[in-house]
Image (cartoon, rainbow, N blue to C red; front, side, top):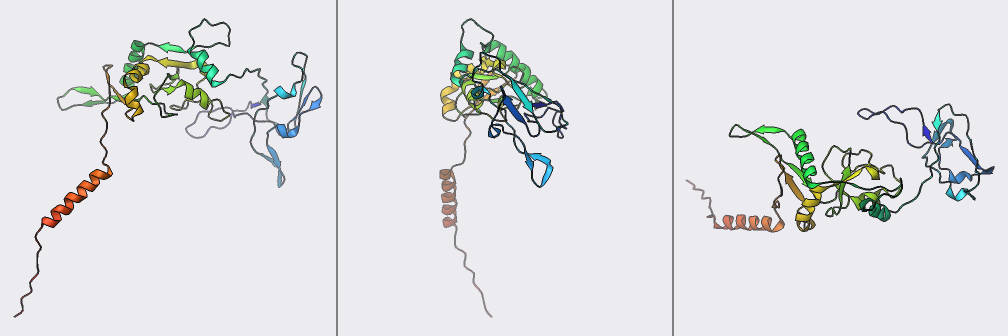
Length: 283
């Protein structure tokens, strides 16, 4: 059930319809047989105030309740007095495991039916052109000491933000306004569980369905060249406005041994200092 009334958006957020919400006191029948109330996850009327209905709602899977899908089935919907307007939707869905969906998306076979989907693949050169335009739009131009202008490079990550492992199949949504990619397999796995975060880009939070994913040739080339370094923790790529890119040098961090060495040096210096004795002369 989806309320037709658009909710009042929070400050800084766009207006949007509420998520699935059963009308108050929903009661269902299939072919005249009541659906057990405990199967319908819906709001509960509060005993201290009968005008209040609180609680979480969740869609209802009718599959085990339909005994014979080949004959006509009647769904009867009843509820208590509710002045809000709702739209009801019944979906016929086929479950596909993340592994099956990954295999289908990466397949190069001819599409046989409308349910078959394929990844759109961006070539290396096309990805470079998109990245150069992205750098041009996103970076700030600074004046250097020689009077010229130099665009600041961008930093890309060749490990998946979800799993923190090197990207096997780097993808992002075709409507995403960023270049950073996630791994296809891990993205599909995270969306295989019911959650309010399903089919949301982990970078920009926009909705991304499986058929909107694109495979980035630039990130593929980066991982092919520097995948081993990424496994060792060096996963940052510096991309410049001219289209060139390099693996960022490993940043030296001050460890315990450096700190210990510094302390030893300070101790040695203090030992070499001459002792000063205070002498008091009395008349």
